[in-house]
Length: 478
Ligand code: HEM
Image (cartoon, rainbow, N blue to C red; front, side, top):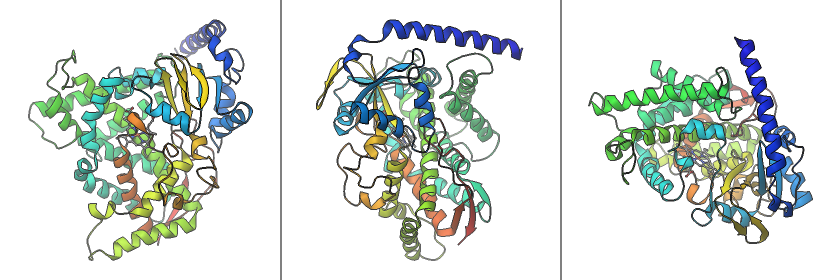
């Protein structure tokens, strides 16, 4: 059985490679000839050097940097099966991220498109995209998040209670914490129990399927991801049914969608209502977009604090002052967590240094030209913004390799800090992410000191940048 699957996969691989080869030979866009850069080898293009740089400590920065020095701020390449134009700089960032309506659309990989479903926010454009953004805006606004504060706080304390005197893998702990938070926020999942375990197992498979090969054959990561997605949808269907029968009443994100918007039919043609399919696709979208990113940010932040004792001390001072101003026996409050100026700068500096989403990918929906970079972009091209270079531009961020939160004392130039993106696709979950991180960090720095157990700066070869060794540390009470 396993042998036949391997044989089918091998034949498919040969088939796909040959198809790519032919596509490569026939479809290499003539207009691209005017753009500097190399398309590399037939079939694989420059994918090998892209992938090897991708998982190195400096990430795709070295891939970009070598080519930017040779070709300038705009260059073409062929990576991961796509003819691609990479650009960097604030002009490119402004036009790609805030460009005229409908000029570019988000450019998901085939696996992502299949797993998330056709009505996901990430696949919507123009008016449909705006409408979905409106629907999710309220529960993710600062006020909307207030009701989850106590849950997030209690989960942070519970997670950290287990850390005392132990060796912990920060990435795994952060992942478990952020998954409990988002599961509870979206559909009131209890932080432990059978439902949470099922949710966690399915989510893991879905998450790994994004960076997999697009073979929908039993046993492959892509196939397992699709199956896990179906099980997750069945779970959401049964929760929706229980809610509609009045068996359970909750005050969560799902409930707000059910109450306000789910009376539409499955044709989805009613302007202000969501079908069940749209609800499920977008719940999954929030889970996928919100989990790995927040997990990675929290892990990098703890790593950077470990490597920068002076920053850690200043951060600890801020949190000790908050504690000192509190009456004995009381816990962190909503007001306190919204008044942590130094913590906010540490979060921004973490997102700049780590650049968790190293490039933003768009597809040109029409021909256009970028002011200041005199190249014509043609409809259908994959156009990518190299965010790592923007975040490491010494003109905006002097001594860019230095972790220095004080560079955010004054506002930075527009389009030079893109930790949460910018424009109509700017991250709608940024308030939630900042809330989770600030609460967790408050309890961490007030209770513990820690030291890394192994120094390894490699990153995982996934879309979201994370430390490869999951950042193992030894934790001691203060
Ligand atoms: C520290 C954590 C996070 C980081 C660094 C982050 C970063 C980003 C960035 C850079 C984008 C824009 C990408 C682009 O323009 O191509 C984005 C979009 C998005 N983020 Fe986040 N994010 C985080 C947390 C979250 C959370 C917690 C949620 C939801 C609960 C979320 C949901 C989304 C969604 C749905 C989009 C797509 C928006 C659209 O296409 O209109 N993110 N995020």
